[in-house]
Image (cartoon, rainbow, N blue to C red; front, side, top):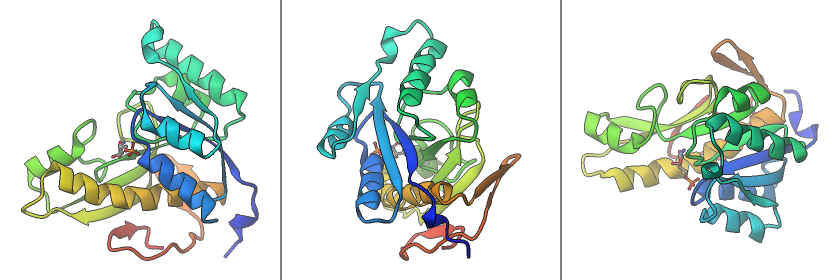
Length: 224
Ligand code: GRF
């Protein structure tokens, strides 16, 4: 197996709108030495996002770019691109960022923007995916890290994790079970990128020699 861990830390920009527990999972993975990432900046479109505080506590630059101050989605995205480029960001990780990205962002970072969706893509795209899974009656759901394209939650899949849906579940209990897996697979997906193991071919992501991560009760594919 090639030793991708010898590569330099990936310069990461994280986009958030809220709590930022996925951001926290990335920061914790860096602290534990499981992820070689230099989080150059955390950007939120909302000043109230708790994730901003998490970043600042860790000494990470945290900025607010309020989408309401821009006339169009494209203008907002141009400001994002400028802020990310100013920090020399190589990979953008959307982590609970509640704005659709326009071609301005997607084309500025082709196959360089990841997002996480709380369902097994292509099932249940868009908001309220956990409620949609319960309402549909599926027996399994999960989460997906993918490369952002110009569509909604439909980009090439990097990593997925599966969790069971129990009869007594409500949106909150399912969301919690999925969240626990999100916190495992997002740092893992970024690590695969940092180690130079990801190649995008059309809508498929080829993973070369993927490394091991600690075992989990979830079903992760590809299996570490
Ligand atoms: C997660 O459920 C993620 O899948 C979705 O938004 C939520 C963000 O949670 N895109 P957090 O802010 O990282 O806690």
